[in-house]
Amino acid sequence: MPPPTKPAPVPTPETLPFWEGCAAGELRIQRCTSCGKHVFYPRPACPFCYSTELEWVVSDGTATLHSYVISHRAAPGFAEDVPYVIAIVELPEGVRMMTNLVEVEADPEKLPLDMPLRVVFEPRGDVHLPLFAPAGSAA
Amino acid sequence: MSAKDDIVIIGAAETDELGKLPHMSTTGLHLQGARNALADAGMTPADIDGIATVQTPGPVAIAHAMGIEAKWLDGTGVGGTSFLFHVRHAAGAIRAGLAETVLITHGESGRSRVDAPGWGRSPQSLNGQFEAPFGVFGPPTAFTLTALRFMHETGTTLEQLAEVAVAQRRWSSQNPRAAMQDLATVDDVLASKMIAWPFTLLMCCLVTDGGGALVVTTREKAEARGYDKPLVHLLGAGEAADSPMVSQMPDMTSFGGFKRSSAAAFAEAGISHSDVDHLMIYDAFAHVPLYGLEDAGFVGRGEAGAFVAEGNTSPGGRLPMNTNGGGMSYTHTGMYGMFAIQEAVRQVRGEAAAQVEGVERSVVMGNGGMFMAGATLVLGRSPR
Ligand SMILES: [Zn+2]
Image 1 (cartoon, each protein chain N blue to C red):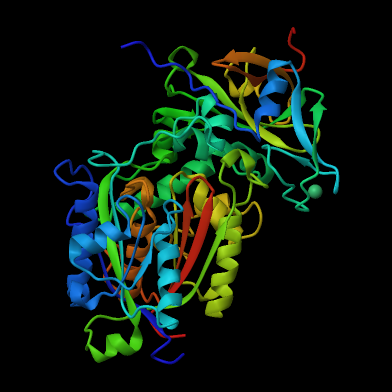
Image 2: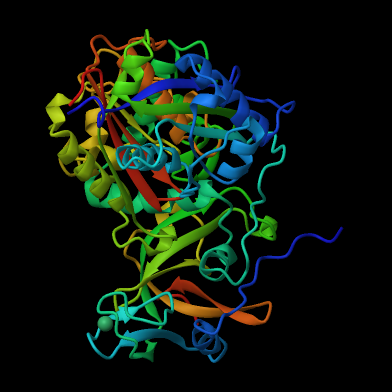
């Protein structure tokens, strides 16, 4: 039996623009043109004012480290990554997303909360995943 | 409250055994819990006209297997807190005349996984798109994700996180049915196997097989049947939802499911924190009871860690909590809420293994999923 592969997302009509953005090297999120708030994960209507007038905007690719764990158990496909950082990052617009941290040692000493990060995109299946690296590390 | 509207738990029991039970299926665990709860209530399936349980296998399968022609069914499945939801829903249904006596069942082959539902989620689901690709591997790497933020914002230390597990071993050491009965120190907890920093093995719940069930009816009916144990009255209840994905909680340091459900339950019961003699807070992981203590207002912001470390929730403390040993040391089938209710019932009746003296009121707070849904029950030895 071949080793398991890492799970790959499959877009839905609502989320497709986000994944197309990742493939194009852009972190696209929704913004409500009615109340001005930003929205992530992609949805058909604004959760704050229920307007359906949501536009796609490009976030600048920066984020801060909101919280994380260092997984010492391998999820299927992650055997070579252990230990690896599963993080929740916050974009400047205030929305948060789950991700993995790359280009940094999985060591709490190296991972202070609120440290600045920048997005990198990694191909996976038919899409590109948004992962994050320390803002200061080499691009 | 009139005897007709006063909702009571008249039957409560767990499966004969808990732990590793590869000779029993998921449904078999439900049915053994149900049989034991009916026996506890002095009832037979003919006395039951309402069924509530989760998938798997769902209320239709349980009713059918027991030969019950239910006229009210509830299959609310919001994770491990579902059984608290069922108690609240049953109370509403009984008061509305939709059913008279409701059986609530739980059975889960969490460890042996005999006829257990699969883990898989569609890669098109929200979870499949926005969490699973990042190597979360069930609750140990997802439920735990909020903890560093909580510790950062509240000043909670790693040692205080470990104290939650230590306190619960003090209780489980008095409980012959608990899976883990050895006392543990903070050093033991911190030195145990690293699972997902900052969580070591002893800060994580067990994975077991087991089940349990409850029978809920009115005081009027219970009194008419001449029930010989103390009735456990439902004084108040609340339910709430937070986020379907842990990464999308509005606030990683507070659980809306605990906060809103406890406020509703306390208001309905007309009690304040000082009226609570005993507390159960769902402890899938060591940080969850700390959230519960703060979100329900038992302590102020940032005080939960020290509160536990100072022994307030331990035997002899002023707020005994998770007195069966909890999900970390008693049992955790996956949907632990049923066992939290069972221990609260035992404490109110005065028949717990590690019995707290004079429990007049007990509060149970359940979590479902990973900070997804929450519910609170206020149980009492006397009617409201
Ligand atoms: Zn809006």
